[in-house]
Length: 353
Image (cartoon, rainbow, N blue to C red):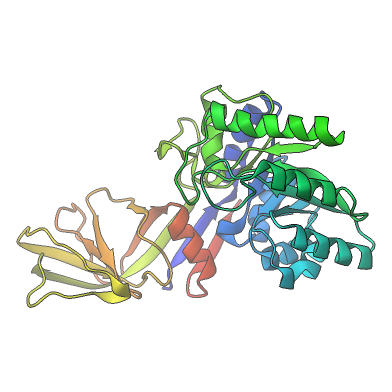
C-alpha cells in the first residue's frame, strides 16, 4: 500500500472547541491556520463547523482553493508585489510590512471594487517580518489611512518563528501599547491587535494574557493539542488527529554502526551512530520527501533510526510483535511530518468524521 495519513476531523473539532472557549475568556478571537494541511477542504469545513470564522494561510494558492467557504480568509505571508491582484481576489485580510505593497493592493482593490483589510506587522524582537522603527511605522500608517480601498484592520506580530523569542506578558503588552498609541495619534480604532501564533496560546492556557491583545493565529495547537512554548501535550486535548500508516518492505539483521569510511549521507546529512551490536531493522516505504521524523510509533518498542528521501529505517529488535514483510505500521504525526505529507502527492489522505 501507499503511505497514508488518516485525519480524524472530530478530534480536530474537539481541540477547536477548547481553544475557542479558553480564548473567549480573554476576549480573544482566533484565526485557524491552515497552511500545514494546504487548506484541506474537509479540515477547513470541520473548523468552520466548530465555530471558527477566520481561516489563515501563508499561500495564496491555498486560499484560492477555499474561496467559496463562508469565512474570512487571511493571508499570513507578507505579499509579494507580483501576487497583489490574487491577494485582492482571494484574501479578505493580509499581513503587511511595506507601504509599496499596500499601495499596490489598493490599486487592485480599486480595480476589483473591493475594500481590503491590512494588518501592519511590528517586530517585537524575533527579527522576522515587521516594522522595527516607530517613526517609520507612523509614517506608513499615515500613508495607508489615505488609501481609499484599504482598511487598516490592525497590527500584528510574530514570535518564536525565526529568533525563537517567546511571547510574554511584557512583549505582547508592548504590542498592545503600540495599538493604543496609533489610536491616540491617528484617531483610528484598530479591530485587531494580533499577538502571534500557537506559542502565544500558552499565555491563554496559563491565564496570563494581556487584555490589550484580542487576536491570535493558531495552527499547531488545533491539530496536535500541544503547548508550543513548552513543546508538551495539553491535558484534555486530542494528540492523535493525524496518523501515518506505511508498509514494511524489508526486514534484516544488521550492525548498528555502518562499515567503512564515513562521509555525508542522503540529503546532506552527516549522521552519528551508537554501537548496539546486531539489531533487527525494518524499512518502510516512506521517506523524507513525504514526511519528517517528528513521528511517534504506536508500538512504543519501535525506535525510529532515520530516513533517506524514500525509506524510513526502524529498529524493531525489542518489539513483542513478530513483524513481517507487508505489515502496516502506524505513527502519530507532529507538525513538520504532517506538513510534508500534505504537500506530497505520494501520500494518500483519508478523512474520518
